[in-house]
Amino acid sequence: MHRAFFAALLAVFAAMTLLSTPAVAEEPSGPILVTIGAGDKSWPLGLPYAQGNSSKAREIWAVVERDLELTGNFKIIDPAATIDSGGVAEGTFDFQDWRTLRASGLAKIAVNDGPSGMAAEVWIYDVNSGNKLAARRFNGRPGQERALGHAIAREILLALTGDAGFFGSKIAAVRHRGNKEIVVFDIDGQGLVHVTRNGSINLSPSWSPTGGQIAWTSYKRDNPDVYVKELATGRTRVLSASPGINIGAAWSPDGNKVALSRSKNGDADIYVLDARTGKVLNRLTTGGGIDVGPAWSPDGSRIAFSSERSGGSQIFVMPATGGAAQRISRQGTFNTDPVWSPDGRHIAFVGRDPRFDVFVANLDTGRTARITQNMGDNEDPSWSPDGRYLVFSSTRSGTSEIWLATSNGRHQVQLTNGGGYTQPVWSPRR
Image (cartoon, rainbow, N blue to C red):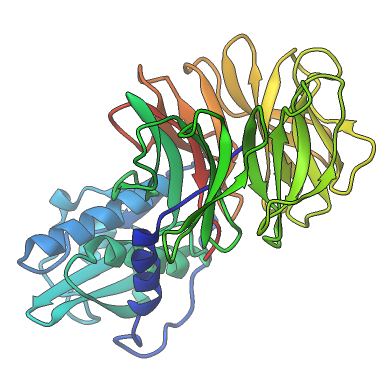
């Protein structure tokens, strides 16, 4: 029922594409494809403190450590236990120091901070064989420490597992501080930027497929209307301002259409609008109870939504052009907030049993897996672009915060602090 972002963050995304320069050594010998079960936290990785005397070196290292911990894949060896006093390049240290600590992999970072900018190197090794897996240098300007850290974490994960991970991606969410505003922050919960500051109620952020626009619902003109902001220019336009509710905007995969809920004629129904003009292209549902929370399948052929048509709220799927709807959820009497996995084979949703929890329905088998249980209320799931993780809001720590979990629920970690965060949505792949 959501997705989002702001113009100031475009510079961060641009920086991520400009940071990398050619490898500091010969071409990597290729990744050792470490097979790690999601959430195992079992593969021992040496990650000594970054070499370099500046506070920037410490900040970059901290970002890398946090990113790798978020994956749930590694057991990071306490850097305070390190006896290695060598450099980062091959031949400048003894692998036996790391074998003694039972490390399987090793990532060594060095940061040089000069008047013209920063340069950070990362060298990645297979400890058991003593082979270098990758070596790369990244350049950055002052203020890009976090972007450098995310880029290094990506390089480490890519070298060790063959997967680039989610580092550098963003989360859009609603932040409740008296009013409700749309904010965006890094996947590790840092680097918060406001998308809205209108002092009203703002809900349901929605990323466009390219990340170039954001749609959301705002009450700033006393009616829940849908607005769209162009990220590059900051220009905002009204997309849907029909009398009654206009909520739950969801972009089609090609970015040309937006599905949302309107209550123009009583019950809320699903409409499809032209994403540029706001013109109604199709009305997908009619009567039969409230229909809300549309979500497009990755290929754009189907739309999932929650509906009261069968008594209580349940998850249904229907053709994106209209037609008969198929019920997906079977347990309980209240299920809502459907969202498709990137491969189109699963739908995550929220069910009440007796509190709100996150479930994942396998569309191939018809089976449903439970991701959360006995941990407060858990709502608003959103998939990572690679389909390996979910973010959602949870009250398990006493206030509503954003949490990340592997798609099987084994590894769960809190991303935000301070309370009042809901409706998280993961940024699209860039």
